[in-house]
Image 1 (cartoon, rainbow, N blue to C red):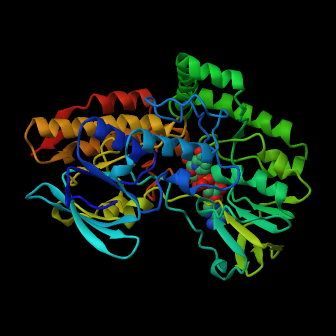
Image 2: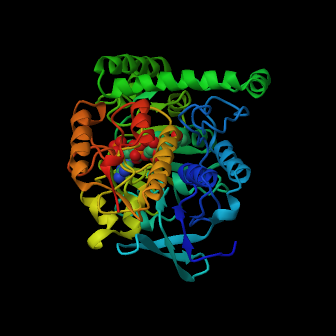
Image 3: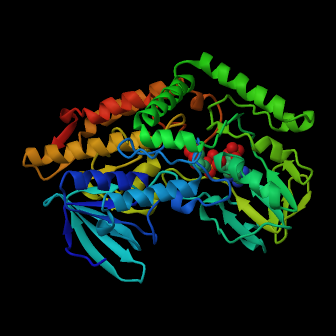
Length: 490
Ligand code: N01
């Protein structure tokens, strides 16, 4: 669509779950805004993650907006294409298309203290750039968006196809091909079973085994869908049950290690029941505590690993040759297709954007040192900047969509309060951020994810700057009833 104006009340960057929720809220508040999306379509991770087997690992009725229940989910855990369809539906239903500029990449944003405005340099897909100003820059750029490409010697010279799970080519077939998968996290555990069915030979390169719980996915029957449609309260009741069950997991991961033991026993039983081969079972038994890294849920993963055509390689990868992966023991594993299920860099999205706040502070550089925020939404020295799913607001236990809705409510309140006071800027008070982070550190110290493994949850100093260390309920309370004294309105 054509640009109407060079200045906007608000600019939302990104059109995934969080950007779309923010757009819906700004429309409801009667605000003028645009949404900038660098890709050709909305959807964020659900547009990009199209590998076979990709699905949410949070039940669909909970992994959707509270204000837009969907009675038509086909199964407990929705596949990625259903979630993408849901987001497309929301964009149309809430009339967001007219606000969205696809093929628009924000290259730079500079804050002007005198005007309280951000000036953005936006590059279009066809090569032109233009300047846009705004009173509120809202980043919905995603935390798990920037793929990690491992630095393995020889990888650039691999002659076959290489695919990160987040950049899948839906046209790629592995039928009668030898496939190597590096990585056995949430993405790996989903992509391995369908690949194992089709590939001639599948080599799974596992650096560390993960804890896997039974998934218990079920397709909803026509009668159930019909009931959800005709009696929305039944879908709401299901959502409430799912929410309560998953909230209990936050206790297991944080203050109640005894509950972790229950989950660990469940995961051990799952492994014992699924894998008869003792040697394979030993390879698949994690040495770190459950929850230190994200625990996984699958009923298909272990059976896939037991196929004759699948091998689990635990020897470290030494280097890659044009047609093989060579491990430290010198063994060559021939592969035609290499799948990288190697995860994401949680601050990568911020590093690539050049966002300059007060006194030339650059957000990506600040975050590379330490991702200091307040409630993951505001960063000190960056007025009129708001992050959705920012640092310390991911969950290891429940639906991110709940966090998104709380953050959207917080941003909406801050903008309304700024207006009510006749101010041009709102910023978190820098002096309250150290206390907030000290509390995160104190609570994380007792958590599963600080129990001794290395993971992307922790930064180089070993601080958790990724996860929210409490319940969703607590975060919702803090975000939806903001303490305005924590902010400077100028
Ligand atoms: O990434 P990960 P992911 N050599 O970082 C291994 C969300 N998600 O994409 O454990 C060898 O968890 C690495 O090994 P190790 C979800 O929030 C959601 O799977 O570090 N191996 C690990 O096994 C999730 O938490 C859904 O020793 C290397 C794997 O790669 C987040 O995304 C689906 C390596 C990376 O696992 C990330 O999950 C998928 C190397 N050089 C993802 N580098 C749904 O809800 C890395 N590894 C659908």
